[in-house]
Image (cartoon, rainbow, N blue to C red; front, side):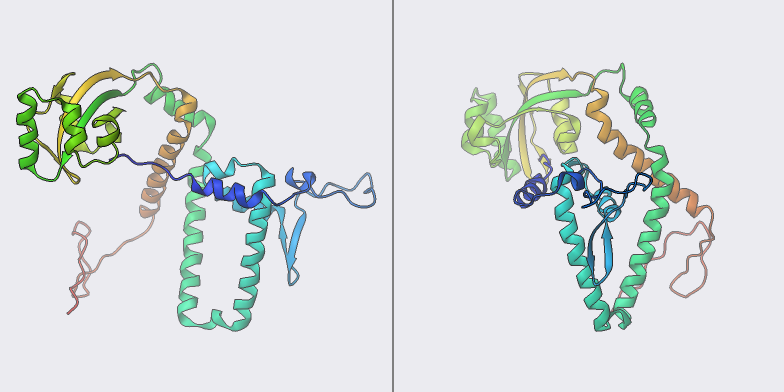
Length: 308
């Protein structure tokens, strides 16, 4: 019922990097020291060549661009971990591209189509990035926080237990036993089909917020008073639940630092929606029906005819 983010990628990357040694100067984003001192007037090379494949250079800026596309948690890893792994990947990619080009694959119609689609996607993403990125400033994040979170109470939290069974009949029988004085935790341990809560702690789910649970489960739990249980079974995609609420509280107001990433994602979503709406407003769109005739502007989106 809950969702958890995978952390495997970070551990894998760190493990792969543990046997690779990077010169400190390279890890810091500068060129390795030359064998002879450079002239005093020579500018520092801020984009040194790190490798070449058939004479095609891979430079530090290529690595930086690859890092920029990584998830936040991976971008925070030290450069001496990220750089060697990404450099090896870029070398491999460049080798494949060169060999593929020589093989003539780029002339095949299906490959040409895929390359055109990739180019169109790159252009689309570049446009959205140009429209959205300027709005992702620290000031914008703080303004959003001040408007939506600062000086406001935190979210409601509920502490509850549940018993999950496959049928409504079983759930009703459990409610009948509870009304007769049966112990909720004992019944959960014995009967619940939720492996995450049944055996270890008598169905206890701990404290949770609204977004942590399915809507039907939250709605039912939020109507119950502490130390009471649901009088009718609650149905979700997992089966039938009997819920017992143990307590309710209001969480502390979240800090700006704890909400920064979430707010940034919200600003990205809003920025993309705004950019898409703006782009759609600047073009002429015509939709066509199954007969090939143009539809009125307010007509519903046509559905393609079913294949026979």
